[in-house]
Image (cartoon, rainbow, N blue to C red; front, side, top):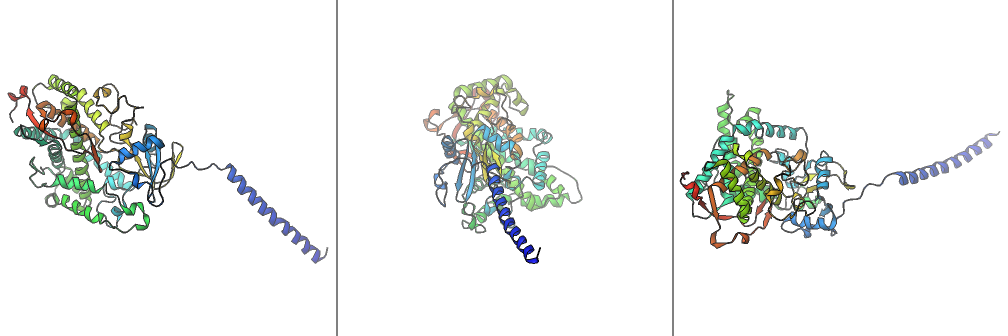
Length: 509
């Protein structure tokens, strides 16, 4: 065979080989396309307008709007705020898929863009604003569990909590016949319970005076700022620009709050030099080696969450009892049987099942965090057959779940009896009832709130009759709510305390 013949044969082989490779590649692509499973679709949802998405559909109270939308689009729903993808779960099955089955993948925290600036005073410095459940977050959670909310710490501070509640009762006794705002009274009580646990001091009296003067409004403003929509969250192209001066305004309030204890912490450091004395949570943090920049965001978080949830829940509970006199009488009869004319103590609480049922029913109807705090998908995952893209903001509408007529009988009515034999608790394992959330991001303060709220409520009911000013009937009380970070009663409850007749001769106010 000549060289030319050999080359011609090779050329023919090459010319045949390349089409075969191309054909094989095309067959592979087609075959792969047909056998590869398609990614599940996004959850259904309302039509999203170009550029703005669903922003204009949100009303003043997102939990109510989202509940209505879920009735149309299903228990797992997808929306878009600008370029931001939002997924909302509104059923026990959806909550379980988010908070349990995919807890690890959906346990990121959605932190607003302006708070993630370099040198932020709160980003990744407390549990609420920690991006992911990494080592740093686990360390902080362990500190909370052992130094603030452990059974040992709870028991050691029982007498302190009882003392502060007694002081509130005595103050209200001095205001007999005068109009008071329940939430402000309970706020002051809760604030002093926490300030003594954390810094061994009262922050203010029930007139609002003291080193913590202004704390009520500062903490309220701080929470309100947390609900302000941020353009840079909706449109990432604006990232790095704080057009609304949000961070600057928030930090002004933050610094005001921290200013209440800055001198105390400084004195505490000087006192601890060469000493291992420990009196409270601040001492523990200093002993661990925390700087002021690490202590401040923890205290702001604890004071904010602790006072807001306690005062809001107590106000809602007392309001519901005033509106439902039959339930009020059952609580009073239970208290009379267990306590007589004495003072309520925490040791009494386990013997007051109807009181506990009233608190649980209040938390069902009026959860302090109706959408919990927003989660973030750290990875793309699947819930209920739908795709949750990475970095989606994920919400659980526990308010909608707790008012679903498919789950609860007569869900809009206040019926504490439903909890007497239900077995439902606060531990986040029953996904039809999640007032404190569930999973890794469950509220760490549940052990404290579930002690303080019943203690305060029982004391208010046991010692006083509550009169509505202006001849307002209980059925006429405005029950509208308002949501920023915490769900509050839109119109603060104004009432007149009257010492109960059977207690007047036994109590000294």
